Amino acid sequence: MAHHFGLLGQAHVEAKLVVVLVQLVVIIAAARVCAALFRRIGQPAVVGEIAAGLILGPSVIGGIDALHPLWSTVFHPQIDGVHETFTLLSQLGLIFLLFLIGLEFDFRHLRTSRGASLYISIAGIVLPFALGFALGKFMFPHIGMEPRLETGFALFMGTAMSITAIPILGRIMMELGITRTRLGAVTITAAAVDDACGWILLATVSALVMADFHLLNTLMMLGLTLAFAGGMIFLVRPALKWWINTRVQREGEQLGVTTLAILIIVMFLCSIATSLIGIFAIFGAFLLGAILSDQKAFREAVGQRLNSFVTALFLPIFFTYTGLRTDIGTLDGGMMWVFAGLVSLLAIIGKFGGCTLAAKIGGFSNRESASIGVMMNTRALMELIVINVGYELGVIPRSVFCMLVIMALLTTVMTSPILVRLLRGTELEPLLHESGFVRPPRRQELTMSGG
Image (cartoon, rainbow, N blue to C red):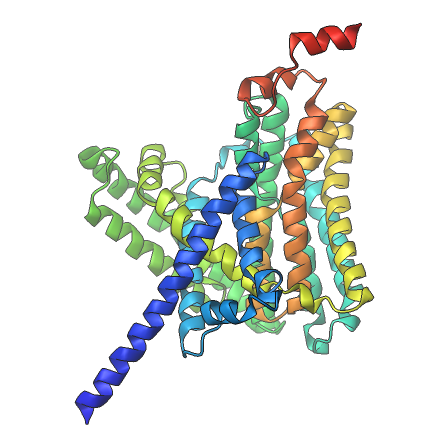
């Protein structure tokens, strides 16, 4: 009898494995195709990957009656545990991704942030957060949530509005060839400060919500978080730096399997620690990456080992997981669509408007100020991480989740085309031509326009 049940269990595991593998084939293929298509129209690959997730979700393919049965078979099969497996894969990928993001973080920007960069970064946090918090309070009575969640919802709306996606912004600036310009340096510095503040804000708000706003629980959680961060900086970092230097000297740019395994173990232990503290596991991985970000040789060696794998496998899983949670059908009725419009509008006004005004006060021209505002308005991946955290905590309903995904996609898609238009006619236009992102005008066209 035991042997019979063993066979049944094995058959169930095999059936679940096949479904998960089919999902992964569809997800990875869709992500690569959409990334290539979006690159052709001048958008970062990440925009295509986010779009792939939305296309595979209930808002597009899942919402087409003729395709719904096939979609349900792939993404909502009648087999227990498939959804949980997909969820765990997504969260595991996020841990790897946040470690790599932390590893790429450049703290020199924070030390040298002064003048215009500081004003822009402050405006880029304070104004969007205030607008998001106020909008959250205004929307709350209409979204059907428990009254006790009102403050948590408003805080997460403010946090979601405040994010700037520095990895995607950095990639866009590299493609345009403006990273080493004064405009680029000021913007990336301001974005780095915003990024750091955004993570602190997200961790703080998460702790408040998870402690259910009980003062003692909240203080204990924040205290443990600060103690963990202090231990990582003053105890773990020196030990890891010594170990890293010995491994790099022995292995060079090609890290050995044992070195990589030890690094992954430490990363998982950091994630376990922050999860036990009560904030999300991703914060531990991010902090580990951040305290090692100044180890240039090690950073490049780890990037060679992990970057491609994480980008090819885990990123598409995360984007698709977000897309499967995004259902345009939850925006039922005119009021929900009005709220969706307000979310995007106030997010743009807060970030673009605030940073543009601060740049103008800092002495930049109108076009340069607007360029900085547009770049700071880029949200992309960071926004998706924030709203997924809010969704996991239960303070963001599916309808608002959908609104915030639309806002993240819109503020990322608009960056490159508007920035290219704004930089034309400025001293940075030759750099656009050199980058190949924009074709220089032909001599014949110049002659015709002149005559």
